[in-house]
Each structure stands twice: as structure tokens, then as C-alpha cells.
Length: 190
Length: 173
Image (cartoon, rainbow over all chains, first blue to last red; front, top):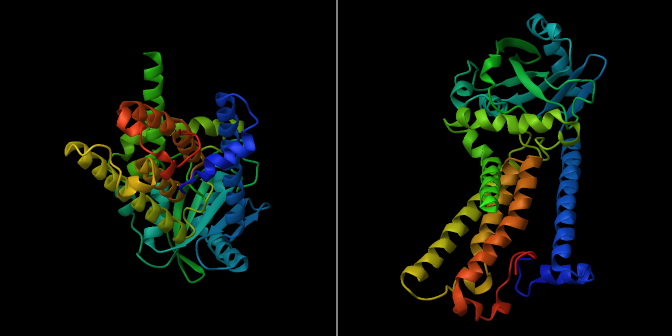
């Protein structure tokens, strides 16, 4: 398309030249290109998500996705040890719903997630987190009814707390003010 | 009148969707989200279009893709302003139609670079709704602008041998 000689135009004339009216041809092209772009985006989503370490424990209604270089087993172990901590249990038990855990390294990543979830940059930066170390962001499910796959395209999440890990132990849990998520109702999961 | 209003409204809506990521890191985020949030929450409540506000590329899990997106965004913006400078320099110095530099090879370099910047933005902030918005922008709004500009440029521009310059997409003529 960007090359001299208009190869894009030639291709279109060859493929769709049989459509008589100019407007009709444009309409067909518009619909096909839109469908193609959306279809390709769905394929990309599936492909890239399959390459990202994640797990879903339907019996415990726990889902996790990792932005660390760990495999599924290591992620499972990390989540299990955090979930077992009393501080975490106190926060997630009353929810009685799916919980998403995003595992990441360092405060800047957590700040990024918070901004993406709708917190302002200033509020996210002032969170009392240590600069380094593994952190787990726990989010609750916001879409109703929430019986689908936790990684479904319709799933909606909102962070509730951040756990700082020291090896396999939870060293500190920071609650997040739910009123500070005023913006983005659809945060990226991965 | 109604058509112009609809066009302006559509343009503003697309602009709002496209610049979401830029607004959210500024102090204006709260103001922005106060009107933008319903736009995202609306589709979420309808099952058929609930995928629109979702993301189709990893946004958090890797730093490579967003960096690539940032590169395209920067390249597109730099190219856009350079070609705008070239165009308006020729105009203000009354040198006629710009035919050198980018304009030697590409018929609408500003649109091309704007498209490149849009691609970069799409990689950095890969929402389906942004993809649809940019598709609409690239395939419908740009050719309309291109035709309008062509009709404003007069006989000199229309008389140029355009076979040497590539039009960057099939919808523009």
C-alpha cells in the first residue's frame, strides 16, 4: 500500500473489480477490512495470552496471571502460599467470588496496574510499597453474572489489595481504597 | 448543517477514544474519565459488544511490545510534523505545491505518518474499541479529508503526474 505503483489499489481492483458501483465496492471493502481487523485481533489475543503464564483454579475460584519469568507450577506455589496467609483470607473470603492475582516485580509495575485500573497517577505513586520485590495484586470480579471463565473477554476486575512477598511468605498487605478507582472500568488483565 | 455536526461529533468521539491513554497519565484523568467511563461501561453491560473495551495484546506482561508501539508512535509524530513543515514552508514561501522530500514518493505523507502513529498507539494501548475507532478513522475520515484537500489545491496539484507518488490506501483517490 505504501509503495509507488499503488499495489493496494491494484489488489483491490483485481479482487473486487467485479463489484460494479464504486460505493458498493467501498462498502464491501469496509466491512471485510473491519471484520478482518477484529478477527485478527481476537486471534492475537488468544495467541499472546497462551504465551503468558496463567492458571485458573475453578474449585477455589482463583485465577492468576504472571508478569514474572516463572512457570505455571511456580506461579501456583506463589499464589497458594499467599492465599494461605490469614491477612489475605480475611480480605478475599467475604467476596465469595472469583479472585484474580497478578504477580509482578517492583513498585513501578504495581503503579502501572493501578493507573490502568483507573487510579490517578499521583494516588498510585503514593502507595506505601517497597520499590523492589515480588508483589501480588488481588482483584475482585466486577461483572455480573460472574460464572464464566475468569479470563473471558467479558470479565471485569478491580484491585482490592496488594501483597508484598518475601520469598514464599506474605510480608505485608496493603488495602486499596475502592473509591480511588474512579476511572477505567476495564483494566487490562495481562 | 446536521451532517457537519454529526461529522464533528464523530471526530471528537474518535479523538477521545484514541487519546485515552495520554489523558489517563495526566492530572486531567479524573475529568476525562468522568465522561469517558460510561463509554467503556456501556458496552460492558451488553453481552454482544462486551468485548469492545477489552484488550487484544499483552499490555502488562512484556515491555517489548509497548516499546515497539512507542517507537512507531514517535516515528509517526516526527514524520507528521516534518511533512507538515515541508508543506507549509512551501506554502508560506509561495513555492507552489510541495513536490520534494516525502512528497516526492508519497501523495499524502501526513496521513501516512498519522496512520503510523495510530498503529503505535494501538500497540501501546490495545483496546478493541481503539482498533475499531482507528479503522474508521483510517478508512473513512482520511479519504474524505484527502478528497477535500484535492479539491482545494487547484489545477496545479491536479495536473501533477501522480503515478509516481503512492497513495497509501485504497479508499483514497
